[in-house]
Length: 243
Image 1 (cartoon, rainbow, N blue to C red):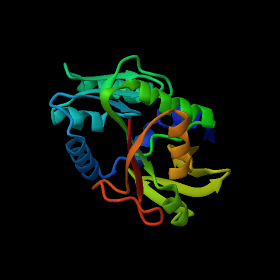
Image 2: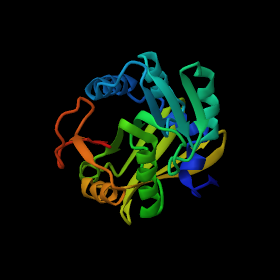
Image 3: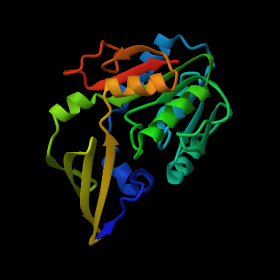
Image 4: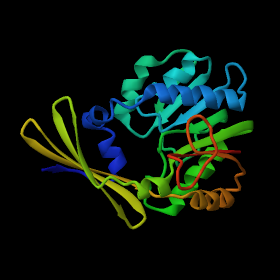
């Protein structure tokens, strides 16, 4: 059994299996979200955007294609190595830990698709909020797009199997010590694998406390990618706009 749960996001995200499992994500919906968000923020032409935890860069590439100067950063060296093939004069990628300031400021900082809450301590989550604030210029905005934990917990699917490229991924979901844990097991080339995803089930109240400690102003809260109002019990997303 090949198992690696130490700093799970660093190991799991760096495997090819992660990208196989999630390759059919709805990027049309993601692009609609980017259109809605950038239009709503009324970002100036060629505005600078930092895409935090950008993965293989698909959303950075789209943001760049609609006219923005984009920097995509991620902890995964493999993901950044893949993304670098898309670089141009206004699109750059580099390995970076999002809990630390990047060293320059941007018109907008996006942390998208539940790429938060991986850390084991509240302090690390707070450092990330503070780092985002440090990355925003005077006119800029920060956006965190997180799952609505209340909705996810109420609708948690205990177990299912997803078959992609001939691999049967068995997914088991549990709530453990305030974390939503997904255990993923599968066999490939006669080798058994086991990975875990652990995301802290942060609520809007939790984020509000983090924002207050980081001296961040929460401006708007949305419940989906069409920027409709947030409802605690029925919204699938928790999208927060702040500065």
